[in-house]
Length: 202
Image (cartoon, rainbow, N blue to C red; front, top):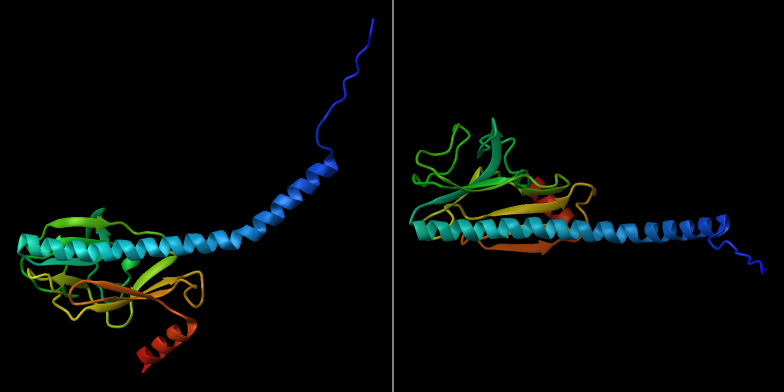
């Protein structure tokens, strides 16, 4: 009767350790690129969402033949409302509210509720706090479009920054909202950020 020998096949401990080491090295090399991709994607998404909100608010104002406003979100007892404190306003990454504004008056720090007759059209919940979208200089409590689709103000400028980077990240950008509600975004170099900061401090 013949006897058959079976040999066990598999990885030795040394081979397994080498494989794991190679995988760890490759993962470490790919991590920065992946983080940069995620940061760019998240910032582009926030920019696109804000731009779409401006266009939607403009269209709603024209279609409804009334003023439509967008303000920074503040929830009280889980009820969506506006941030009326000037010291806390201007941080659009904390979310925003779009609502009809029959009075066509801008919000004031003395206000405590939405204007009379207002109807909420959309609520954008806060996103990742790492990516900040804030007003560049003068804080505006709201951006209001009239029935002709024009902002009651002259527009505004916002910064979109990565809070995990001292300089705002390589994908930082300036977003300028025109009186027509169009959002023009410009990716900024470190020199641009320094120059803009210098102008604001003058």
